[in-house]
Amino acid sequence: MSLQKDRPEGPRHSLRSLSRERLTDRTVDALREYILSNRLTPGTRLPSETSLAESLGVSRNVLRQAVSSLEALGMLRVTHGSGIFVADLADTDVFRQIAGWIGTSTLTQKDYVEVRSIFERGVYELVIERATEKDLDRLEELARTVAENSDTDHGAHVHDDFHRLLLESTGNQFLVTLGTILYNFFWEVGWQGPRVHKPPEPRATGSHLRIVQLLRRRDPADIPRMIDLHLSPHVGPEDGPD
Image (cartoon, rainbow, N blue to C red; front, side, top):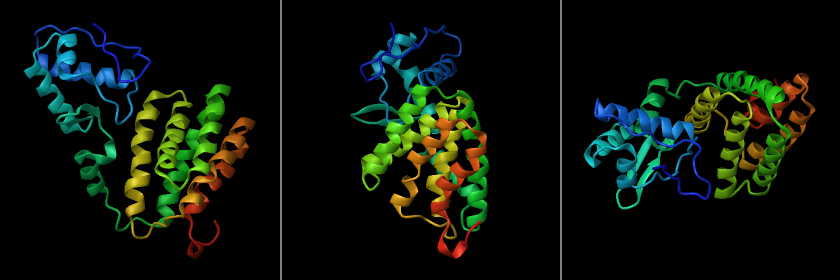
């Protein structure tokens, strides 16, 4: 029996039945594989507990233990009365614990922008090399929506979608996973630093369309300009030009 996500199109990968050996650990592995293989995004609701247990061939008790393990790892979120959801890393205890070890009180504006520049340079290089025209068309559509809705909750969600698609356009799934985590740290942790400049929202989102236009040129020489467009809003007047 294949599981279906709560959206019109079904997943490309289904959960496999398991033997009785180390059922809880194997159930954890199967659920993790299901989430990652189907690229389920935060907030996606999984099938019911009964459906999951039946599809995996395990008892509901084993299923609950596996879900609890993934909840502790920050991959799942259980809402009683609503269901099991893919967790948003930024809302998990795991994220907060790692953020606590990193700390933000001594994070400087220069270090924050420097690390983001290094990361974004690599992303742009791969997108220029590997993105399809369909990828770029979708990025442009999202960039326009971000610019038009920069001061709304919808704009914030579309902004997240833009950067998720940007990572996916690199064709490197490992980078998609790690990059999503890094973006969460840049947005949720970095901006909490008292010495990191927080730009007005329109300035933070207005550069995306121009970045897509430069990506369409597929010229690596444009990468410094793209980085400047994206990160210059994070440089306050007191920081001066680069």
